[in-house]
Image 1 (cartoon, one colour):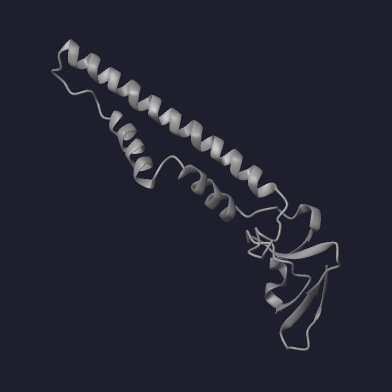
Image 2: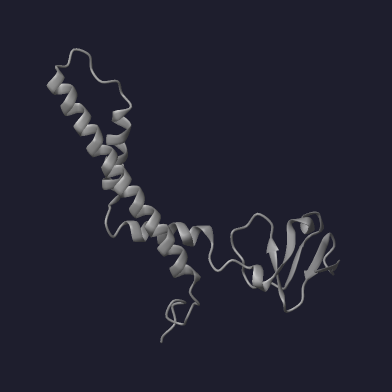
Length: 147
């Protein structure tokens, strides 16, 4: 990475070779930038990244793909209902229940916990599938072009 004075007062030009990209530190995006001009006081916000180190996908793409895959089975309302049921379990068992009611409460709790585990297992599988899908080479159809 090379930083030189720009023709514009107070600005610098940052460049890198063809084996690297310039990356704005803290950004989740990795556009193909090899030459940019920035205010001099912002030059330290840029770094040089080897092409091999550029992530295949952003966190935003990963989150969106994971949500898309989860939606094949669970709607947002379904997810909220599962979490609400689980949160309600944290409330103490009401006093004055009969033994039969306590047993019913325990069975209900087991069912709610089982449902949450099923959802979590599915969500983890979706996360793994999202990573696999997003790690595949992009082709023209994925980029919005025609095949």
